[in-house]
Amino acid sequence: MEAFFDFCVKILAGFLVLFTFKEKLYPSVNKLFIAKIQQPHIDLNMRCDEYDKRCIELTKVIDILMHGQKAILHDRIYGACRFYIDEQGYISLDDLENLDILYKSYIALHGNGLCKKLYGQVCELKHEKEV
Image 1 (cartoon, rainbow, N blue to C red):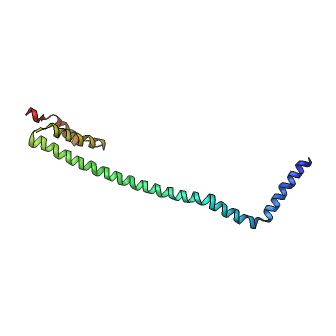
Image 2: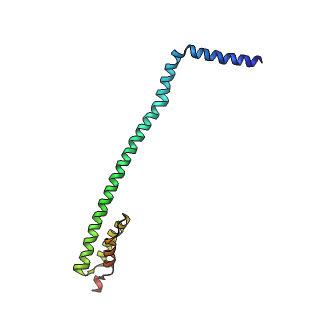
Image 3: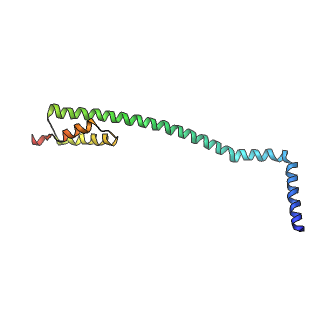
């Protein structure tokens, strides 16, 4: 029982010393806490927020570039298909391979519709060697 009493007295004395010298001890402990623990986390959170904003902006730019690339591929495929179907009436194997590369890139960008139909018609044309 005496050991427990000594323990309680020491705890009480510790609190008494802490509250007595609180004004001298607390500011330095608080400054240390802010400098070593709180401020680095605040700085890290600010950098993460800036990074998130840049990622959102870059995602928008990438979407715009992808739509532009898809539009260019659509125009190029449409023009080439119209030339081979309406004017030339046939296609060489090299031209078909080139058109196939354009078409696969267009499909990878989720293009479809008219170009798919025209590409199918060009693939059915006679090849240069068959003419």
